[in-house]
Amino acid sequence: MKSFFNKVSVVVLLALFSFTVKAQSNLNNQKPEHKIIFQLTSGDTTAHKQLIKQFNNILSVSPTTKIEVVCHGAGLDMLVSGKTIVEDKIKPLAEKGVVFNACEFSIKERKVDRSKIISVSGFVPAGIVEIVSKQKQGWSYIKAGN
Image (cartoon, rainbow, N blue to C red; front, side, top):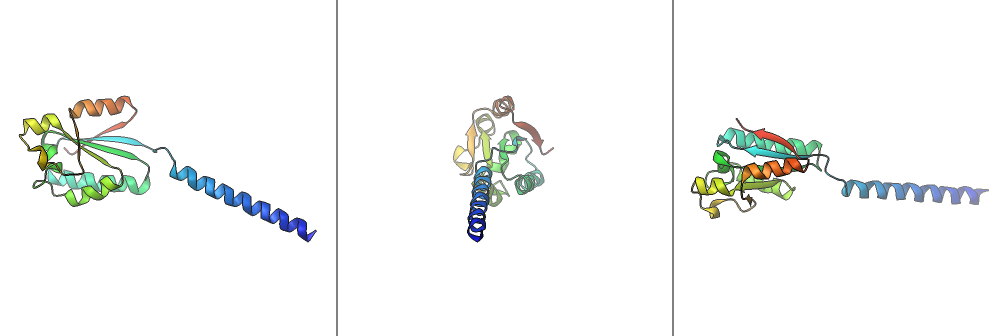
């Protein structure tokens, strides 16, 4: 009888262990809870700081959320070395998967040397087209700044 209970205990423990490992695996392979595309057109550094704070807030409660920000017009300043005041905060967010993109039309229009765009930033040919494409793919749209 004691042997029977020992065997049952081992089976129960193995089942619990298997369930825990599977649950952890599902968390690691979890689809993003949300996909959010932000549009930044403001050169206001307060708006830049608030946007960075918002990204950190989102990821603290929903770490699987995919976030992309498209900076164009005056918002491009957030990604320009020498103009941005949040570069040191952008890099850790990029390491967490937040995508920062500079609009190539805005780069040309504002005569910004492409080499001045911070290294963690990507580029999109047209900011609005990128935003519309993401929306067609089911991403939520948020206008950042003023």
